Length: 214
Image 1 (tube, rainbow, N blue to C red):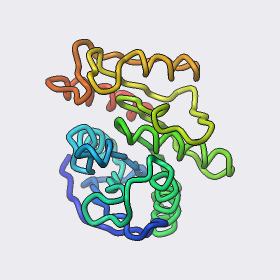
Image 2: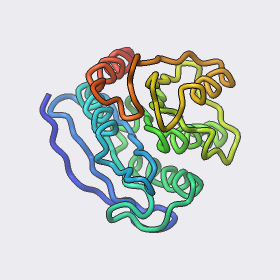
Image 3: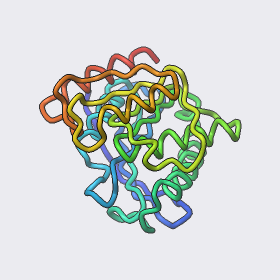
Image 4: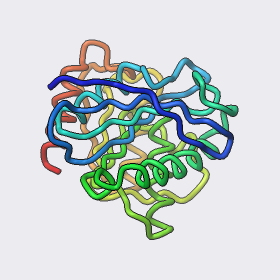
């Protein structure tokens, strides 16, 4: 399915949130918010795991929103260990939903990779606590939620956790600890590194399977 992208700017608590929005060329089922890895270690919206997740979403008829966190690209502010980033994503969700009510009424996927999982999980918890609409699917790859946790985290029982067996950045044991605490299964990709080198096709197939079930 062809994809066309455009830039958009939303307003977070620190100023501009610079985003790319990938649009499917076909019927729209809803939207996805896809969050990138650590900003101080080269993480940005064009990370290959982020774009792989976004493409999988687009192929399922979801508009994929890929923001840059604070201090990355043209996004304002400085790295805030997930606290400010999570607050910014609350603002983005509200603004995007208000501007695109037809998408907000459809399916919604929230996904993150590495540092982005911490923001995604805490965004989900905040929305649930405030009794706001929560995503239909939560996808966490290379889970690093506990490294940047500032609030109690509640995630749905069908959360998709994907982790590389040989993750050299976030050890598999860390993902297992998170999964154990929340009663979740973990999908382990054999021999995969943190960035799923040589395993992106496997990652995409796992994503497509989950998204097709929405």
